[in-house]
Image (cartoon, rainbow, N blue to C red):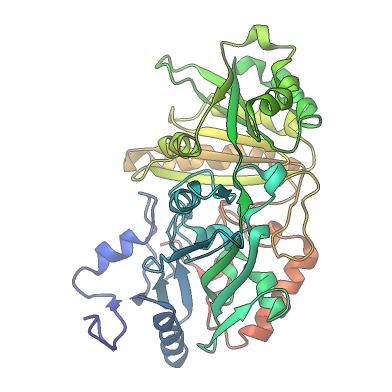
Length: 456
């Protein structure tokens, strides 16, 4: 098998080949590229290529890592040594409106899936950032749009096709290969198989999406966080609350706390009723800015997120679930945000981001708290790497005692040896270990542990 991509051959790019470094760097969306280098990168054309690549890696004793869209902040698909299977060409997307299902390849982005559904009165809880491919997003759980009504995105996965450590293509759902199906919905980068297709149960598209926002001075963060907890408890399920602590977009450089309610409704009248409690904020008079019930399209929601997390930025992120609520977790992070080296850095917070009471027992994905925060360092100059990475580490370490776990898709798995374990409920972590022993006893797929990845 060669790097030439000729008919009947895998397309391989080996370390040392011309163009290898360009291909390696392109495996990661983040401009902050890890120094880890696979021995070989396989650019799979279809699921048969994936199966052949796994068999090749198995015979050569090369641990396998997998990449769909490369959007993971630490570039966890890039391992030192072994084989990286690039799934970026697996982009099929077939929608069956009659059955309300879709079959999609792992490299299909959230924006592409949303566009395919838009004219069919159908929807799916894609990620907030439209450039994220569904492969890593769904296998990691999927904290996406409208979580109160739709739940985590992996709950909408009703079947997968996957290549196992033996290089066999299998179908998995609640009846066939149910334990591998369980793992495929939440195991993330530690999954011991390659998902080549997802079968999704689609949702009815909302007739309208309406958004209201308050912008407060950073000094108001304590009262705002307490109010967000209170209003979250009474808002209807299809109202998604999000809080961003960051720099005001007017060029002033002022740090602010923005609170947005996004309502997915059947009509404008329903949306108005759903947002009444949000509109009755007792601190509305203290807001620097207020937007009332603004209709917005799904594309505009994705555009707003893509404008914050831009391709080519240098980014670092870390996450924390907490049982303490935003009133405890957000103020200390807001104080750290005021000292961030980059004005583009921010903290994103949400109460119940996977929906009230969403802790599904039939998926590896684990809801580990009643509130969720993510710190993002975003900057441009490589010379500022140490300052921005250090700021984020200090900020997130400061609230670590308030945490109950992490979200496997976005947390910094290299920040501590317990990060992976603390991204799962204890029973789910133990079950993943048992299933890895069953499905991949020879360790074909590169495991989770920090020790398996050299940071370079």
